[in-house]
Amino acid sequence: AYNLQLTFKDAAPDNAARFLRHIKCHPSVNFYYLPLGHWDLELGLLFKNAGELRQAILDFRNKFSDAVRIYDCMIFYEELKPNYVPEGIFGP
Image (cartoon, rainbow, N blue to C red; front, side, top):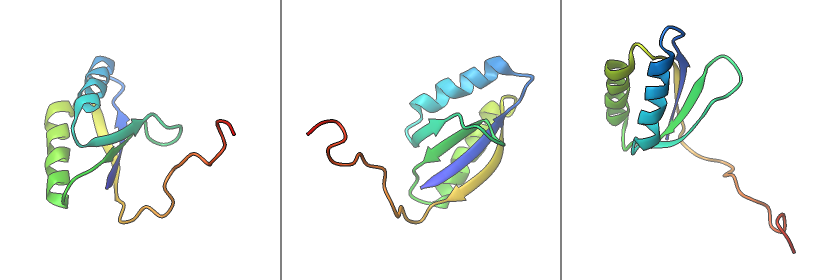
């Protein structure tokens, strides 16, 4: 699993909306959210290898260089504590 953090370029608000529409349909985007902090958008991506990640980054840069800038990229090797709903939280 890979994680990309991006910032939106102020000069292109319509292009940022176009980028958001694109990632909603992207088959490798596992999640995305708009966090508070140093960057504007975080993507969770699933690829078989780093080569596929590199190709996706190049694709994002080619199509949306006027809308977003990649702030950081992280690789996750293992999920140590998955998110889950504790038993009984929604009823008996």
